[in-house]
Length: 354
Image (cartoon, rainbow, N blue to C red; front, side):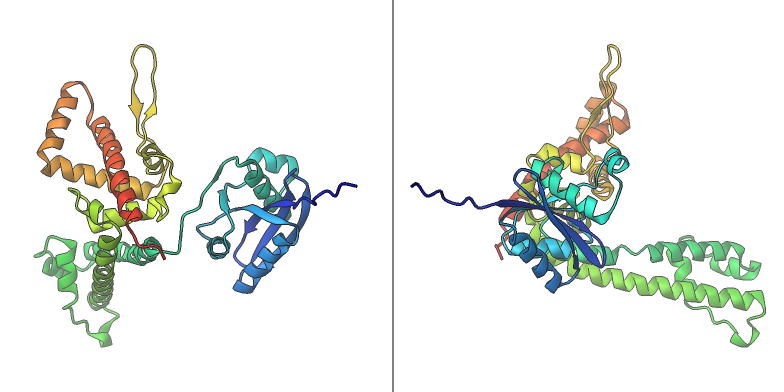
């Protein structure tokens, strides 16, 4: 009699993430559905989900949707437990028309994507200094300040003539806001448009000043973090703390998940797209990718066109070859993406582990 060793079943998981619950599905190595179950979004729920998957066998990998939002906590927990996590896209529209849509179906499809490794990528690491930079930049991005500036400008244009002339001595919105903070409306006579406008303008100007103080405070906290995470990148011409912070967020702390600088350029929307027709071959701007990172590359290119002699000489040469300004900036953005990928990779590899 020959005893046969019992083979350990290998399990591939899939998770459809939501705000309050995560739906998990488990497949074996042959793609057979082993089970599907819902778990709470909490530390206890994460432990239960992992134990449930492990009850079917050895967990090989788990495909998770929305690793950077709804499933961020679960992703961190799985990675901390040594489980390989793949980020998967939402099911294709054709699949949804054929099979329908439920949480269980989406979780199973996520597992099948992970099983086949189709359209699956390594998620960003969200347990280091780059995640702290991202959080602070989210707080710094205050659309309410822009809205308050627009509202103040509209109120100034429609204010009574005497008040509008009083504020006309300052040409910029910032200067007008400084004057508006000194206005003293008569609160007992707010029924008069002049006093109503003074109170509204002073309120908006005070809001802008408070938001400016918050932005300055956050900038003061961001500067040393970005300098620590990307010293080589911030040393490059035209790359400010804000630009470097955005490129760090786009790349992720585990930048090695990007297989080449071309992948980083595509992620930033700086990869050229061919539009050849007939005898003429041309390229156009990539409308995809992270638009905030693309904006950072654009501003770096504009800065270098103004202050870098080598960049101006390059632009002049390409212009003499028939390139338009947009095409020249596209080429510059592609070069900057290649340059910053190399420095970001060196910076992030130099960070201490832990």
